[in-house]
Length: 355
Image (cartoon, rainbow, N blue to C red; front, side, top):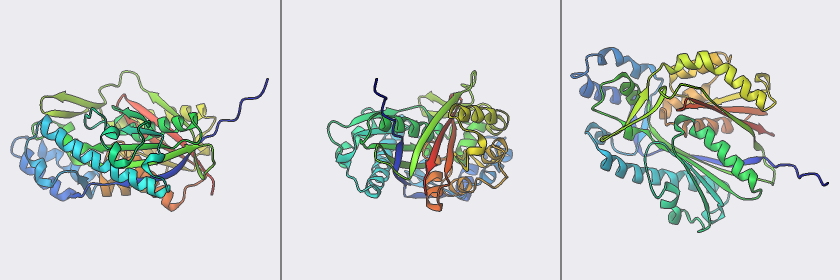
């Protein structure tokens, strides 16, 4: 009996990011929040300190600042979502293609990650003509992964590339979190969301079978039981409303370490094998909790804090912005991407890099 051919890992061919043109300084968002929430929400005076404790300096949105100061319903939010998400998708994907010296017709599979708007036909179909995708391109739209989507999406895309060596797989994670801003919800969860979320997109091209410097070595996930209420969306006539029912930093500190240890064990790795953690920075307190849980010195997750300061929490693409900065600085031999998202889920991807 002949031996099975060795499986080729997917290789990270290129990575690019994109931000919408409207820049919102955190101090201006706080001033506008005072106007909206201050007179009608007695707790806002106490909660307003959240804005200065996020670590965020500025964020980006697909609509001008004043657009968000008026109440919007599903039709207006959806119109803004389709226009903004399509533009970011095309910009990030075209940058990734150019970096890889490829064109849209070279892409065999497209994985689209998005949880902040609804599009049917899905985004990759809506931009197919502009991107130059072939008519036989395989489309894999994925909804509902939330902040874990960047890492889980990379895992999905890597397995698809590995299944068909030599084909080009394009992963695009695009989230317009700003469109979930609610002026009618006087809750702590909505204030936290208003203080944190921004818009952005990231695109990655993967290919297996021909070698490369950065390989997707392995991946794993963990779904905690009875945690549906930690994070997610409420859906009502006006739009999405954020769910934050538990203190996520405390959950991370208490629960994450043994889960990452087990995921690594399933990869036949240990914490000592990881030279760099590349994490989704949900907020300043979450970053500090990640450092505690992963037994890192406070301040170790420097790229995470800088992306948070420059862009806010963009949900799924955010960890890929962190990866972009880590690549520019130079990846070590082995990195572990981690992200947490609704479910409540931890997702991890191990990268092996040859200098």
